[in-house]
Structure formats: structure tokens, C-alpha cells
Amino acid sequence: MNSRERLAATLNHEQPDRVCVDFGATFVTGIHVSAVDKLRRAVLGDQDWRVKVTEPYQMLGEIDDQLREALGIDVIGSLARKSLFGTDESDWKPFTLFDGTEVLMPHNFNTTVEEATGDLLMYPEGDTSATPSGRMPKGGYFFDAIVRQEPIDEDKLDPADNLEEFGLLGDEDIAFYRQKRQWFDERNECGSILVIPGTAFGDIALVPAPFLKQPKGIRDIEEWYISTAMRRDYVYQVFEKQCELALQNIETLVELFGDVVQVALITGTDFGTQRGLFVSLDSYRDLFKPFHKQVNDLIHAKTNWKTFIHSCGSVWDLMPDLIEAGFDILNPVQCSAAKMAPGELKREFGADIVFWGGGVDTQKTLPFGTPDEVYREVRERIEIFNDCGGFVFNTIHNIQGNTPIENVQALFRAIADSYA
Image 1 (cartoon, rainbow, N blue to C red):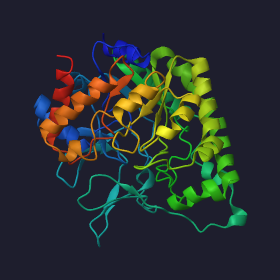
Image 2 (image 1 turned 45 degrees about the horizontal axis):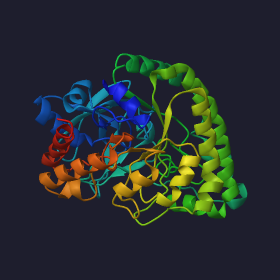
Image 3 (image 1 turned 30 degrees about the vertical axis):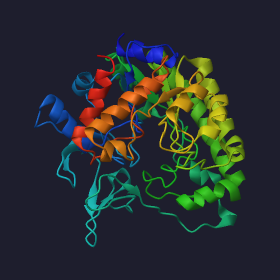
Image 4 (image 1 turned 90 degrees about the horizontal axis):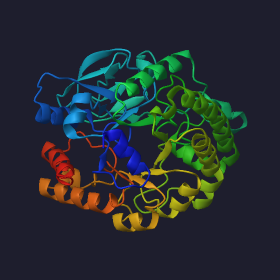
């Protein structure tokens, strides 16, 4: 099988010739640029190569064609035209991280250093005349959003204020996706995934809007969570209009990409915590499920694409609803969370949903274990999840920048040995 065939078999719950692997195709299945830099040097030996940062908020590094082939990675993907900070990839410039890693950043990635703390401040669309929207603590590896909530006047709250970032695809967007279509065509032996814009209802990473210079509406994280209960009608109206726009954009993307795409990433909204659900089942069914179902139903009616939901934490109790809403794929499969044991997940839900991730614990084993411990856990997870297909190997969320390179190498060695 080539990589595209391997992913197709996996998505159809058929046993592939070997486990299908994704690193770097999405914003939730990536590797921090510092770790990519070390990995690339170790595998390919090119000491002068600067890795591109494709997602500046989490500082994820590009898995280029040469590295992907060397590591046996099967899946490629397209993110949105603009990053979470509003930067774009029309050009690149050199940048040095706190840990000394020399990288390439988007041309309009502009920062300042806060004098009192040494923290790195990032600005929406790189406009340093605006209020900073992101902060990387001195010595840190990625950014936190800076909440810029204006005082809330209940009488003047308007759902349109929380819809500023959503709209129909414009000419620049269409041109971007046409280029991406060509990029996919040139790599047609690879598995493929497309991040759908505007379908992440209530994704808390998007609520503070670090890409907007003057965000309006409800932009404080705590206030937003409270609003799902206390201002239910407001949130519902936001989702309703957001969904209306998203459905029109999906029609456009379907026409542009056709069967080139195999998977559509719909949402990164987290519904689980380490111990249980983040929201009640009633809240999910009332506020989220109707819109998830509309999106999934349209995609399934128009294409052969499988739909992908990212949700951290313990989502066992939510699984029947996610399946009913039409999701085909769950990521990241956080096996360290309550009620998320690999074997039980596979037995109970493996016939109905593809598990994308869960290959090794990024909270403990990968960053803090020994290479032998990483190797054993990876082999165990592949044996469990890849039985009869329905499993794309990835870690439990992105590999972080200070992960020991020996452990990352052990991970890839275990994958290779699983089909040697």
C-alpha cells in the first residue's frame, strides 16, 4: 500500500499493511519546532536547515517532504490561510527561540520583549501598534492568549460581536485553497486531511481571538464558559450564524478539493477533562450536537470525506453522541484520562469510530520516561488500536519542545519495528 491507500483502508476499518502514521498534518497532531529541529538533524544530518513554524501559537514545526519520507509518515494536511495570530505564509524570515533553536517564522510574525519580565509578546497580524494578544513566558516554548475583554454591558451584548471572525471565503482564501489543491495533487500518494474553517463551535483557543486587533463580544475564557449556561440563547445565536456561514464555505471547499481530500477536521473544541466531561450531556446535546450534525451530514452527503473531532480528556460518556452527530474519527484519544483505557475503547467503539492518536502518553511517558518505556508503550498501543484497522498513529496531542530527542527516536523506532 502507498500512504493514501493505507489511510483509506484505516478509515474503512480494514486492516492496513502497517499502521498508518500522522505527524504534522494538523494543529493537534504536530511536533514543536524545537523537537522537529532535533529530530531532523538526527535523522537527516542537515545542520544548516531551518524548520518553518507552521503554527506560531503552539510553535509547531513543518514536517517537510524529505523528513516525512524518512520517518514513514503517511498523512499530509492543510491548515487555514491565516494562523491563530493572523499571520500568513506568503514569506518567511529567520527567528531564534529562547532555547536557541534557529527557525523560520511567517514574515508578519512580529514580537517585542516585555522589559519587566523578559516575556515575548505577540501581536494580531504582527501589528506592534495594536495591543499584544499573545505571551510566551521567558524561557517558554509556546504562547498563551492574552485576554482583552472589554467591560460587558448586558443590555448591549450583540451575538454579531462574537461573529466578527466568521465569514464567507474571499478571493484570497479561494486562491490559497487552489494552491493547496495543487500541493495535494503533487503528493497524491499521501493520505490527506483538510482543516475546515469556521466549524469549531466554542473552541476556547479561538474565543480570545488573538488574531483580532480589537475583539468585541465575550472574549474572556471564564466568561465564555459561564455564558454557555447563563447566556445560552446568545451562544446559540452565535453558533447558528457561524454554522450557516460554515455550510456555505464547505460547499465551496467540496467543489475545490473533491476526492483529493480524505478527511475533514471539523473541530478542536474540548469536551473532556482528566476526570470526566467538561460539559453536561444535556449541554452538548442542546448547544453543540445540532450544529455538529449539520456539518457532518453535509460533508457525508457531498463527499467521501471522513470527519474528525479533536477533544481532549475523558469523553467516554460522550462517545455515543459524537457517533450519532456523525463524527468518524476521534482525536487525541487521551488514554491517561478517566474511563479511556485503550482496550475498552477499542472493544466498545472501535467498529464505529477511528482512533487518531493515543499512541503514547505525552503527559508522562514521552517527556519523562526512558526510551525503553516509550518503546514499550508505543508497541502496546499499536497492538491494541491497530487490530482490524481503524487507527492512525499519533501521540496524545502535540509533542512538546523539551521532549528528549532519544524518546522521540524511540517512538519512531517502535513504529518501524511494529511492521518490520
